[in-house]
Amino acid sequence: MQTSTSWRSFRMAAWLGWLIESNWTDPFLFTVYSIVKPLSGAAILVIMYGIITQGNFDSPLFPYIYLGNAFYIYVGAVMTGVSWAVVDDREHYKTLKYMYIAPIYIPIYLLGRGVARFITGSIAVFITIAAGVLFLKVPLHFTEIDWLLFIVTLILGVIMLALLGLLLAGVTLTVARHEGFIGEATAGALYIFSGAVFPLDILPEWIRPVGYFMPTTYWLELLRRSLVGNVAQAFPTLANFSNMEILGILLALSIFFGVISIWVFRVCDRIARERGLIDHTTNY
Amino acid sequence: MSTTLAIETKNLGRIYKLRGSKKETRKELIALQDVSLTVERGELFGLLGPNGAGKTTLIKVLTTLLSPTSGWARVAGADVHTEPKLVRPRINMVSGGESSGYGLLTVRENLWMFSQFYGVPSKEANERIEALLEMVGMKDRMHTKSSDLSTGLRQKMNIVRGFLTDPEVLFLDEPTLGLDVGASRDVRKFIVEWLKADKTRTLLLTTHYMVEADELCDRVAIINKGRVLACDTPTALKQRLQKDVMFEIETSPLNGLTPQMMEEQPEVKKAALTEIEGGARLQLSLVEESALARVINLFTQKDVKVMNLNKRQPTLEDVFVDLVGRSMAEEESSERSQ
Ligand SMILES: Nc1ncnc2c1ncn2[C@@H]1O[C@H](COP(=O)(O)OP(=O)(O)OP(=O)(O)O)[C@@H](O)[C@H]1O
Ligand SMILES: [Mg+2]
Image (cartoon, rainbow over all chains, first blue to last red; front, top):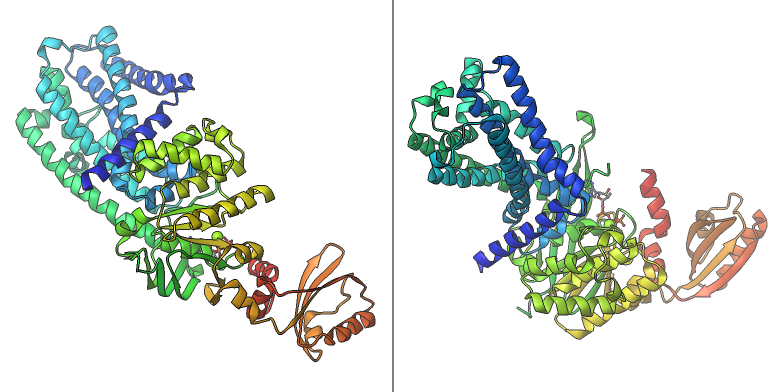
């Protein structure tokens, strides 16, 4: 009974999310969002890298930056995919209250809504990496990839990001204005603190602990290492840790943030019911 | 289960904290106060009241969307605040006057999705969707994208969504708001038929149309400023006033004459005023028919012309006037000016 409710919530939410997200009737928009935007983002980064390093594309820092940026697409896609559903259903479709009174699990419904962005995000990540390998000589060789580590890390990370998305969804529920920006703002802030495009060693010392506390830091590092072996040298502090040690830290931090997220969501859900925010619209 | 009440509330209250832009403007708004109601299974129960009376607030509390700030409420045997998971599978809700739904899904897809959230087997859901759309006269729109529907048809789709999951207790918040006369009639007919088909079904609707409450509901609670002022069958409510004689008079502008001045006349129990184009409409309730002459006399003194005069049976509007002291329209305009 419990599992069937969860599965029902998840399956139907994913179906709905996919119909909304893929909205194939507008292939132009779809192309822009899943192909042009990530590719132009990567292009800007590559040009900047080229200028700053005077064209030193053989340094391990290059795949570090390129892959970090590519996988970071998942952070925005999955986190905001989950939390945006609150804004979408509440403000645009005016259905959140009907979802709420239905016999489903709202957190699982929201996670389901994020699946579509995960899929379109995966397309963008794949295209970005493929472009890097084909045109920019990102040193990625199929025979040297640690597939097991890659897949385990990817799955763990996506679950972690989805749970962080739930935390944002909870905050979104309780915020009656400008709630649309919460996801984007968080993803933007994490970009700096996750070592996505530069190792944390570059940041001022006093602020580094923030980055070392974020599971995304270890997640990106492990993804890079699983694909390109020698990239580990590019991140001095983490270079002393083995893959297994980093995986252990990632797992521990994911569990920690996962528990926090579920707790925050519950608290916010209660606050939203107390303040009557579940069907609140801003009438912009 | 079937022996328990469909809805039961005890001293239910809800206070909204209004947060102004400045800190010192924090105020509290009492949306519901001391509401104690019981609704039996099988009843069609109406909440009648002007804008801002608290009808929607009460529905939101009963459907687990909003926590009460005092008192408690049980729906289908479970507490709405502490056991929402037990309440939700047994209820559904529709708010009129808004167009909700996923525009890029067809009518059938929208409805089917909600049926799946309630665990209705897919085949059965499709059969129900067809039957219900047929009953509200929009089966030909089944495969239309809901963004292409008119507002009225979207609302009908929404109403179908409420019935689709076959709830034990269904809440309809102003179901006919914004619908044209024909569509409203269809919806009312449909509501009555749905209830008749199964005696354990319960329906609570809110309205500020007097006629709707009168024609449709087994029992009506009259609610104003968050308080339930009376709760009974429409017949019993009207019988309270049966001894009075009711007149409706349309006149030219009143030239300074006020309802209070009429009420000062002997045997004039109540005079309620509605401004209309080019004059006024007055609802008089008199203890004796002869008192009419005294009111007409006042008109003559102030040079007010009588355009139309009807004697009539008391309506729920009169009951409202009797309880509140003014008409629903007056109550709403005073609410707005606050
Ligand atoms: N979220 C909210 N925050 C603050 N005040 C609110 C909120 N929702 C409703 N109110 C206030 O509570 C009172 C009751 O509102 P409610 O919507 O329940 O009335 P109603 O009877 O449904 O009116 P209507 O006929 O206009 O739909 C009103 O004064 C309204 O302004
Ligand atoms: Mg209302």
